[in-house]
Amino acid sequence: MSALVFPKRRQKMKTLVTIFFALFALQGFSPEDMYGSYDRDGKYRAMEEQIEQINRQCEAAEQERSEKKMFIFMISMLTGLVPIVVIGKKIYKERSWETNPQGMWKALGIAVIGGVALFALNYGVYYLKIIHNEVFMILFPAAIAIAVIVGAIVMWRR
Image (cartoon, rainbow, N blue to C red; front, side, top):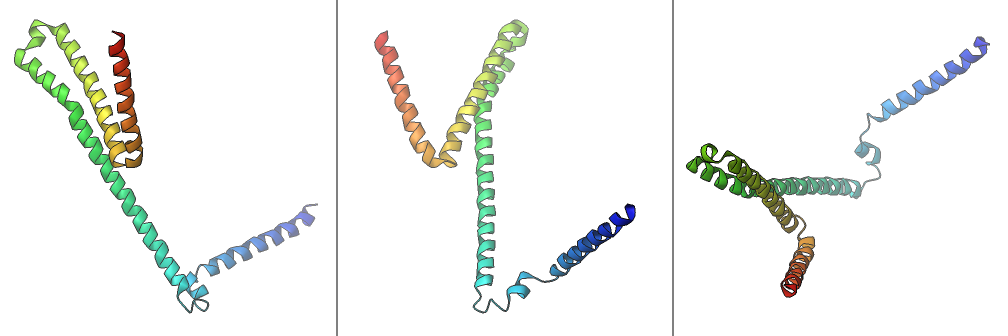
């Protein structure tokens, strides 16, 4: 029984080795060598250069977008740190940890929450404005209109 299976395995192995060597031999040819005789008017080379140019443009656009995101993050981070620094400076000058430690912790908590909220608001607005300008031009006026309407309703009911 095993004598009958062995020749079939040997045949499969020969087939796989032949395919492997054929693929290995094809690697020695560049596409320009393979298509060179058919590319007399330079269309293949022109297409290849166009693809390379598109790839470079995509990489440059991605790099620019990454730089914009980092700029937005840094500006928003600095803006978010303002409440924390201002309240921390006031706590340090007045030495409130000695006189009112519970109030100091509450003030620091409010400062941190306010800083995070300010960071999130700035990052969202700058991100929409710089990266997705067309969405910003729709959402921002709509948000302002909704805020004015809600404010008018609240004031009218009082």
